[in-house]
Length: 172
Image (cartoon, rainbow, N blue to C red; front, side, top):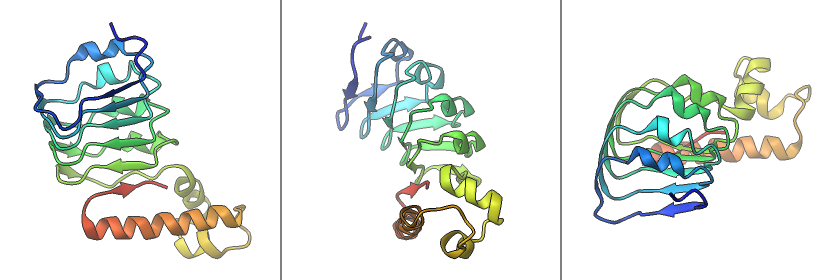
């Protein structure tokens, strides 16, 4: 019934139970923030993908369990996905590498396995340079502007800092 809603922020409340599948009716939603509650059960991927305009989804600091479904990669406009500090398990979906708008993927403090998939610039350049970081940054034959190279460096520095703190895993 909230079809016109563009943002839902119910963070840091005492909500419990499962995330309702009826959220699928919020088709114009850009932001869904449910962090810091006591929500349990699995992530309702089928409902979330109905909200095709989502750019931010924050489900962190809950008690969600189960696996992260590949279906979430259908959210093509997603720029931030925070699933940290839950009880999620299984393998990180490879399909997240297809989310070219994804800038921040937070998965820490779960029971997940596998690598964080590459996306955007890293994926494009690693295909041409076999993943050589030195080549990505310095090779004059690589078709990148100075701005793109600086973005790569900043993203790498940010990722290293986040790895040391254990919280944020940005994707460049």
